[in-house]
Length: 368
Image (cartoon, rainbow, N blue to C red):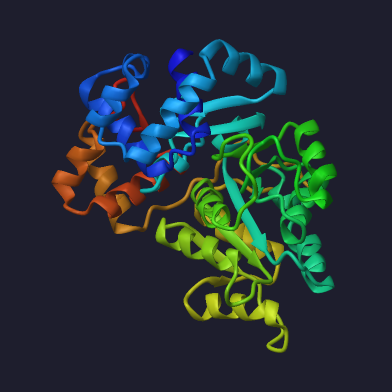
């Protein structure tokens, strides 16, 4: 518990994900607890080679927030901390190269342990965009966690539609949990929590919604989901950042076509031209998800009890699975045998998602 509280203070000190990863790997390599380093922070921080400004912020936070005060504050606000390596840490986030180490959250972060779909788009959504959400997000997706960013427009509409069809939903914020912003999202936020969903932030609880935070947030939306659906997006928009990140992470990208005369459709049309899957019906979305091993329900019928069994056609997935069928192996061993770190990481992500492999008690991959 002590280490988790300290990780929260590191996040609260605005020490970014890259420095957090450096700390995490240092502790892992030297088999140290975070509390050991925290007890002698000034010296230890220099050993870890933290930049001077970040070390100064950590020292200031350590002085202002004794662990007892910090714990009482979190308990009073009803917030929790999730750290990389814990059972409830969003499983797909652990597989992206720029993964976070610590997250603050309200509600049930466990909804991100299941299959998930990011839905993103314009803040100034048109009537067409609203109709698309109503049409495409139907009961087929009732077992899929809908993930977005709780901004007005497509985000809030996607969360609300998830609640309407009985699907789990989770929101990643571009600011701290203390803020309820924008005003138009306040009711939706309360409804998400009441329905057993989650509100999650990588930022200090008091962090304001400044522009630089939202691209950082977008990687969490893309990285926590197995596919991203883009509905109405301009050429230069956060939605396209999310879609491009999803593609970089090896996740499926879908886009809804629109009028060539609508600037909010141009981004989607460009994504389709670049290879994103064009979708016009909920059935098409369901087919894409089923091909990824995600369980979807037939409209008007009970959802299936488990993930759909799919035929593995990807060559890297086949290679990884073949090695693991001979015995458990660590990621580093798979990379040494196959030679491409990113391809191996992506293959492991999808094989785990499809239930073909899992980690054993020692943290090694093994065939299921």
